[in-house]
Length: 148
View (cartoon, helix red, strand yellow):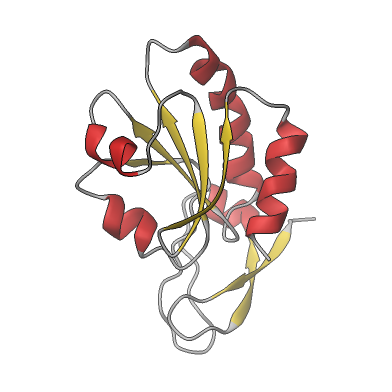
């Protein structure tokens, strides 16, 4: 049986039943009330300084923003966990990644001094942060608080 998630439409606020197996196959769900397309990310979204506003600050759902760099070993350890969490939290929390070497303005804006740094954001405002590698359960605990 397919997993069904209850996902709120960003346009009208209606809660819709969405079969996640169809989303994972590439289908884009449509709101039952207003017929708007509901973008659901089942993989982390790559964000840059230029796309931060549209992808993170104006996101209809809370965002976990991973600030990382390709040369960072601990960042590579966290990456598969974030891939899993993006699938698991699709439609409730957006998982995004920002390479700090290529996008120093956003990293500087949040005062990031160490990577990996995971920022929990709502409406572009920082709610909480995790610095360094932590167990997946700790990240999930933070996501549960963020998604409330």
